[in-house]
Each structure stands twice: as structure tokens, then as C-alpha cells.
Length: 78
Image (cartoon, rainbow, N blue to C red):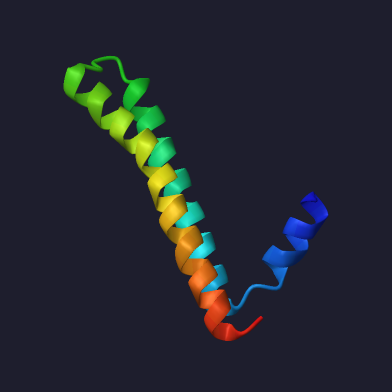
């Protein structure tokens, strides 16, 4: 099943691949920022809430990117 998923990912059209990789990079950057906020010495309530929001947002971005990529793939006709 994993082989099938990787095979499908490598045959994506360019636009869908760009959206997928861009969202993956943005999600990694947001998670890194959340981690950096949490390891600072003066991590107060506001920084903790910001870190929590930064850690939760990539899940929603992933869903939106997945739906958009699927719609683009349908348009490409693959």
C-alpha cells in the first residue's frame, strides 16, 4: 500500500506537486517555530498559546492542500 501511495505521488501533475511540497515546507517551518517558542526561557501564556496555534494549523493546511491537489489532478485527467 505504501508503494502504491509513493507511485501515485511521483506521478502527480506539476501544479499539484508544487502545492503539496509548498504546504509540506510551510508546515515544517510552522512546527519548528512552535518548538522554538516553547524552548525559550521566558515562555509565558501568550507564547504558549501561539505555539499551540502554530502546532495545530499544519493539520488544516494539509487537508486544504490535499483537496486542492486532488481537484488539480482531476483537471489534469490522470
